[in-house]
Image (cartoon, rainbow, N blue to C red; front, side, top):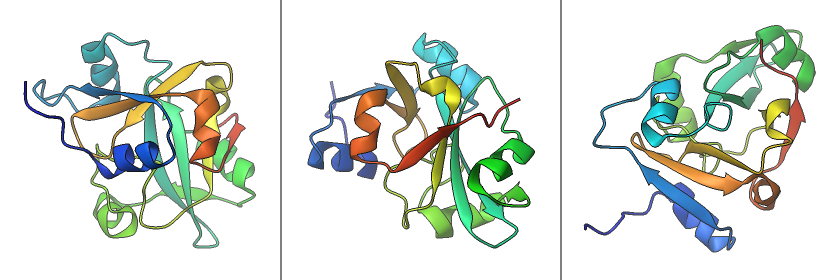
Length: 158
């Protein structure tokens, strides 16, 4: 078995001594969140996608939502105190966050942005999200997230 190469996300979790489980689905060719959940045999309610938005004030925001749900832009704007927000364009993602579309993680972005996680995660023991590279997910105890990420929970999905 080849040695697992560490992503920035894994190195940051290691630094903070936060336990995690890496899930490698790089051989599967799937990118869409629900397909990832299926491939990993995980509950899609526990697998989260990382979405980057920009508010009317030009401030950027990060939202984590279950792969089986959609971000409600009105609820999300309200959660961060903006009149309105919109998704950033795919081509803006890499220069802004250091991540590519499909491999974006809330941990280890170039800058720290206000982060909101859907309220559905509040009662979950663990959540899965991108390890910062397409084909890799990390599974982290929800209670450990606050050791590495400043975030709030809010009702942000339809």
